[in-house]
Amino acid sequence: MAADTPTGYIKHHLTNLTYGKVPAETPVCDAYGELTGETFQQASWILARCDVQVDAMGFWAFHVDSLAWAGIMGLIFVGIFSMVARRATSGVPSGVLNFVEMVVEFVDSSVRDSFHGKSKLIAPLALTIFCWVFIMSSIKLLPVDTASAIAAALGLGYMKIVPTVDPNITLAMSFSVLGLVIAFSIMSKGVGGFFGELAFHPFEAKGITKFLLVPVNLILEVVALLAKPVSLGLRLFGNMFAGEFVFILLAAMMGYWQFIGAVPWAIFHLLVIPLQSFIFMILTIVYLSMASEHH
Amino acid sequence: MNMNATFIGQIIWFAMFVAFCMKFVWPPISAALDERKQKIAEGLSAADRAERDLELAQEKASGDLKEAKAKAAEIIEQANRRANQVVEDAKGQAREEGDRLIVQAQAEIEREINAAREQLRREVAALALAGAEKVLASEVNPAAHKQMLDQLAAEL
Image 1 (tube, chains in turn brown, purple):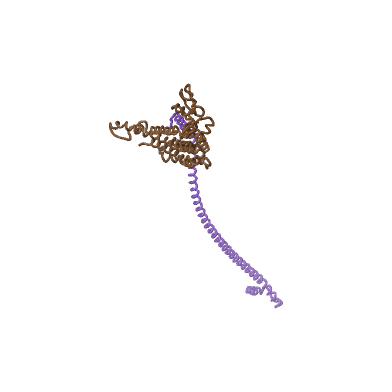
Image 2 (spheres, rainbow over the protein chains, first blue to last red):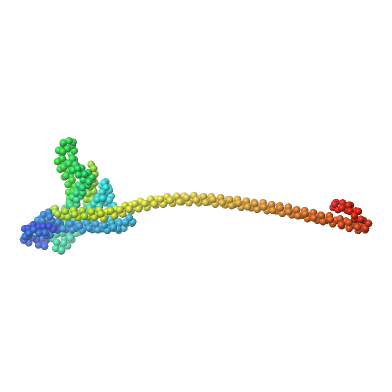
């Protein structure tokens, strides 16, 4: 493993377990990530073992660890909640039902406060975002080397278990939200209304000038529209990445003494994780609320 | 930061979980919560109603009690009056009966006296005659002196 130097260690911990197609002539690495000097004779689908291979894969590659852990955490979420939903009664709640109801009511009141339209989608969407992001981010409270040590024992070169430290994951969620924003806009204002909003605001004019201003408006509004998901996804990614990075730095510098710094930092992150989950959820609600309101 | 097809995979995960949540998680829980909310509201209003009912019942009970007391007093008074009347009636009847008995007794006495007087009247003539016979030792004709003797008897 190329983890002998602090730089190598950090780099290793920030690399995802990637599955993708390497083109011919890509160098072959051994199980420890060292170049063997050989190259692939033809293009082939492999799990990357070193950075060179990851870089060679290009766009059509998958972060197996991010997707798997995101899926596992999502399944834990829907598992707990659907189990509770099956047992939900109007009688006296107890145990996990109490907790789930508390979360549901919290999300429901947040939705009611910010979203004034009627939608069957928005409350479950907000609940999924809040809980899923929360669970996904919470895995990082495990000591940083746990997962990669287990993965190394299983013969996997990389294992980055926190999905929200992968920008693919956070941006995929925020761009899904963008898709919903566009869909909500078109549903409430029609296609013409949606494009009119993009083309004739914020600079308004009458007559021919109105059409002269379209390019300027379009550039401004499209940037504003795209800024929403980008900032939404990067905010979560940035926060989680920074947190994870500090854990990795502490581990790289202090070895087994990392807990001196890692424990307070983890306690601090007990505040950051719910906060970031909440921000992601509430901004989603706000964007969708703005999209479905008439100006 | 390398963007790749993970992006697409995550969108699929996201859509799946949101759809699942929308279909199987949110509706039952929110329905249960709404139902409970309604149940609680109903319970509270029922409690309010029960309290009001209790108040009304207590009011009614105390009214009934007062009425019953008044009625009882009235009945007792009526009974007392009736008893007095019965006693008075009995007294009157007894007095009447007593008077009647006295009158009857007086009449009986009168009758007895008259009968005795009649008998005496009948016997006195014979007695007087017998006395006179003895005194005159004959010579006396009872038929000749009958008128005088009857006169004497009538004077008795």
